[in-house]
Length: 199
Image 1 (cartoon, rainbow, N blue to C red):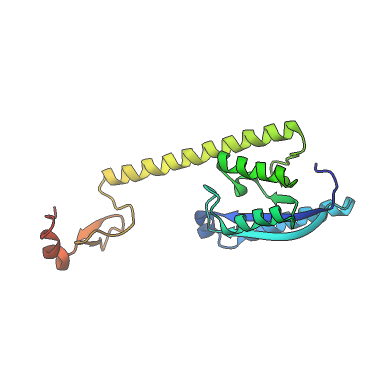
Image 2 (cartoon, rainbow, N blue to C red):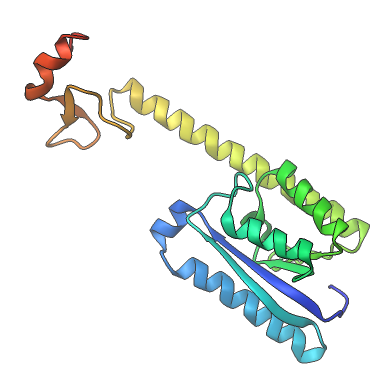
């Protein structure tokens, strides 16, 4: 547990594009609600702190730090507006070990604490820091595994002659009956054959 310190709290909420597509509102609302309720609950027994900022990155991956609200939150941390960052789980903030280390160093420099509800971290102890980095390493491993699975799936689809999305090449169109395949576009055939014969 964090020592009672009247924190100025920034809560960070993030969902990926896939999560947003599957659950457009629920995940964002659920994360924010859990964080707000946690602050209220902790304030019931002592002066834990007050909410100073809500930062929501919707439809954005955690693979790097190029997230508008994350950057805004870190700037607010540097300016002293917030001195505790709260998330529902560590992977909402970062899945990349190098990026998190950079954020963690900045938190230390600006005397900002960090709390994750799911992992129940106490980053003021050496044991808490060790557990934190173990979980960061696991999150990065999980992301790499997911990337490898996606790549393998794309290659497997390509080997079967299936379309993986993106721009449709000149001379082709979507197959009218099979959305995973392309068909030759008769109107563009002659134009395309001037450059590369179609098979």
